[in-house]
Image 1 (tube, helix red, strand yellow):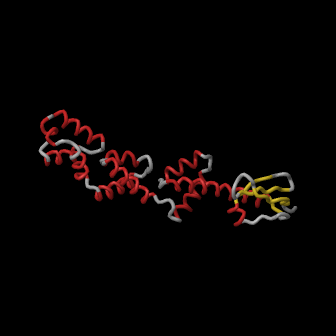
Image 2 (cartoon, rainbow, N blue to C red):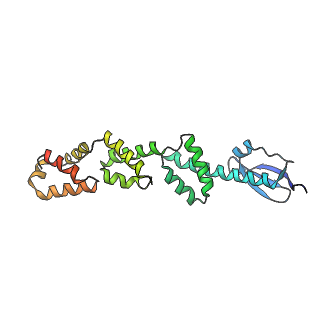
Image 3 (spheres, rainbow, N blue to C red):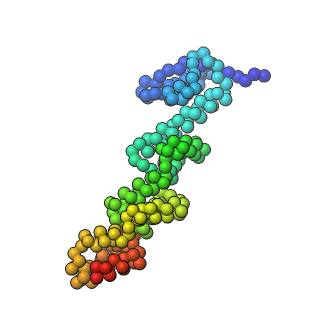
Length: 211
């Protein structure tokens, strides 16, 4: 017994959605696909489609929607793979669809965790003068790998030495006030710790300034 085939009775452009087409079948079914999917998988009036071909078109359209959503996310700013995956899951896409899309975009260099990590870390350190503890905490929201986080931090603190960052923070204060008022010194130390610096990094710089 042959496979049942269904005739395409119309392929029409959707008025309210740019680059979208509606395909109407002889059995009454209607489904929409993007112009990109239609271009790579031509469907014309009068074509006979079996159920496998229809399911393939619908799946290709789903993958196209995942891709467009991912591209929309990274068009605003750089993002980590972890953040993109979480956002795509929230939109209701399946794990298989997401993994396929992420792999494609990584291959094209549109998603690059190492590049994003360095950009993110550099921005936080330059803007907020963050120390290693605080930076690692922020990186954990984007990366699950301890090794990647360590690698990013090592690279960043070679570019921005920890001692220099602590000095920059101290130089925002009056050295006389820090030397002559113990409360001010304690506040400074608390501030440095909140910014993510360890005492082993703080103490030598305080001694350098004789604070």
